[in-house]
Length: 190
Length: 330
Image 1 (tube, one colour):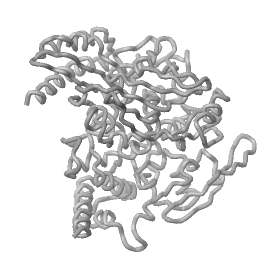
Image 2 (cartoon, each protein chain N blue to C red; image 1 turned 45 degrees about the vertical axis):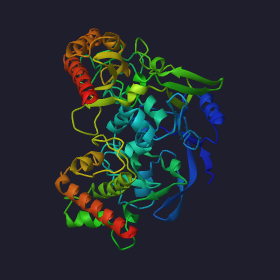
Image 3 (tube, each protein chain N blue to C red; image 1 turned 180 degrees about the horizontal axis):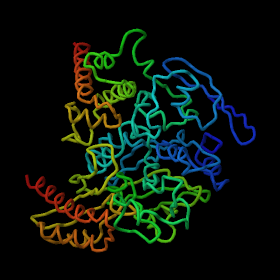
């Protein structure tokens, strides 16, 4: 996975392979290109949105090695070797991810611009809950099980802003997706 | 954004050598503050050396009950670590009170220590700022300063240190391990941050090329009874106005020892030594707590818009010590 370099004048071009949604993409990139711009401008994967471009709004959220991150704050060349999942790859082909389905059923958006980031963030957040990660509002910091109530969801999703203020429907959507996940897990363990 | 060359370091010594070669070179880890600074023009490196492949990503228990934390451990992994949650709860709480879930997954512990102030003038290259451009002036005293520091300030700079994580770490007497071309050294975190004085451009005692490799937190049994409280303008994902990391050791109504540090109040993560001195050996009463707060805040130099921070800091200190005492007794 060596990076190859072609330096002319003051700018550098690197040959980078990015693993996105199960596919490999070879790109020639200036190191200044963020992962978000690589996705949107170089690969036409425009599902990830550019809101603030400063890590404040979460519209650009993707999963990097299974974890949610802000793609606007990551340099694409530094993501070589990582497994990247964007909103385009969150479901299985035509089958929607349960979080996507829950957003539709609960009408958890208005303009939809923040929605890909909200969904990717929620998927990453639910994994964090399953791993037993506490949040700053968790009453018992050492508990292994998280009771994912409304306070927990709002705190854990605070990195995703929605200017339409669809939060009132986003929270129930995530609650339902979390409950479904638990039920599926229990069935799997029977 | 100014062009720069990207290098991926294969080992620590070559990373240090690469950055030491050029005054404008820098390290890239999580990038959550640096990439933003590249976009804003606050940082203009000619070379960025990516250190994320270096083997500094472990959390290890120390024989004295403390913990060694690799510089590349992500903020979220440190907050979720059961050893930290059990032995140093206020450190886990401070980490979880900082930034967002996404940023905690990206940001590293070493980078968190080195993040720079969010002062609006520092981040706006069209404005003068003594920290960004020494000698250019500071518009904050006459301009927007509601979020600025009231302790540790100088004529040149009143910018607040932004880290939550560093606040319990200064309370815990953490040590920073640093690699330079001359070898490895250990810097107590209490000596790590510099007051702005006449050189606000230097946040820390680190020299160019220095690489943080690890942090060590010595064991402190009474830190199991500790708390971090952060007051901010919105309930989540905002920088602190005033925060406090507190641990207290009380025996039959008398304070044996305490650890206190403020965030958002000063130009550096502020260890409240004067308050601790008042508390030591004193009865655990509201009166003592007030005296401790007054002792620490006597040197505060507030301005019109940030004067509220002094009262807020006093209230937080008294209330948090009362809460910790009640929990202990219940």
